[in-house]
Length: 206
Image (cartoon, rainbow, N blue to C red; front, side, top):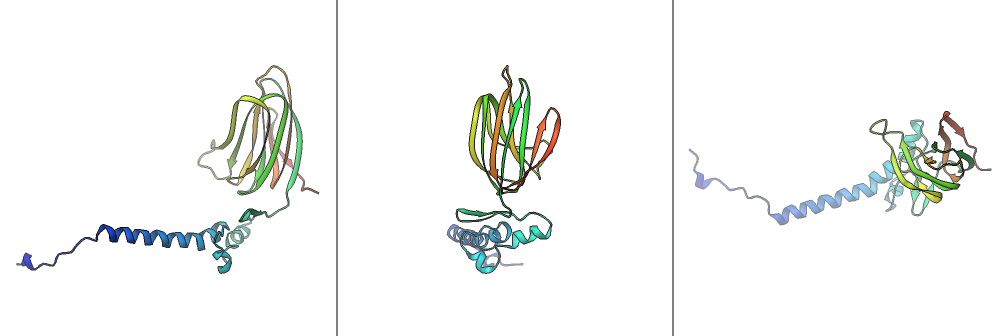
């Protein structure tokens, strides 16, 4: 029979020891994140360690191998894009009770500046549809206006690869003319109307 009085007691680690171990683990994880994972997977290199280790271009190289467009690479306030930007300007007429939609195909991280003006109030939603989404009806809403306005200006950075743009609806009693002007790193346009869906080719800026 074992003598219980002679059995060595195993003491649980103190709270101070647990806290220290947790802090050390978090610091190590943060170092790995900023020096290897972010540069290699996303091309983000805030500390410069990824460039020193040759990891910054791994994410774009993998995309190129898969036949995909390389992702934009951010360095400080500058974002390097894989292709030249485009400029697009087009006019639409939206009749009473009609909805109309126009989107641009953009890679994640691509940038666009935009302006739209109308000669009457239109309800609108600026939104996007990622290529990879949890279900077929999923979309991301960036700006929703249910009151109605005649113009909107801004800049946009695509949070995901997919199509991003506007839906306008005319709830008035007369036709409204609309002009959309954009410049940015998109590859093509897509138009949705009562006549169906149309792919729009857009040329590079001259």
